[in-house]
Length: 258
Image (cartoon, rainbow, N blue to C red; front, side):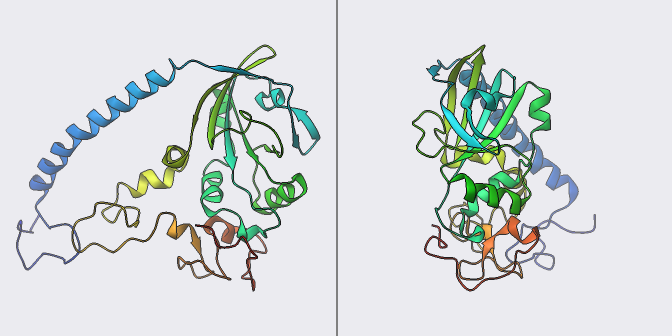
């Protein structure tokens, strides 16, 4: 390497300092110690989750899917374990007016082949009316199972990411999380965390001079040119890859999500 550490002629404002490879490797090795500790703590938390108690629920409670009402037990598809993601829903809103965060999360797990191979089924539930939900699923091209849990009591559809266990015809709730607990589904977040500019969100602890971030999920909606924005021509980002995803005049009363 020809660069000299801290040489002002090679410094780039608002970017990491320029150093030689040996200096970079030393800093990287120092951070790796913390990363490995973080990984081990994550393993310990997963072990603690596996030791949580569970709550039995009525597996005959009906939810509505493409074949009409079916018992919640059917979501297991004969497997012993089930992961459910609850997608927020705004009644009567057009496709581009649905939750940008949920749209982005669902886009990252369009099918569950790897989960299925480990004996785990996956489904998305939402409180929307099935006719609206079915239209949205078709538009997005989703391949995972979707169901409406409208007017269904908890714990079916509980939380935003929920795990269930089946023992014959008995069904048990084992885990639920929401908020940033949902990030584990969104692989893009983990990759952005590896980059020097991060997620581009205002809450992040960034070095001075780095690009200013916006509010959480600010970049999950964009216009047709990819500019992060809320407004009458914005959509959840994944929708721009779908057919007929053209700008429209209005998002309706639910178009402006927090």
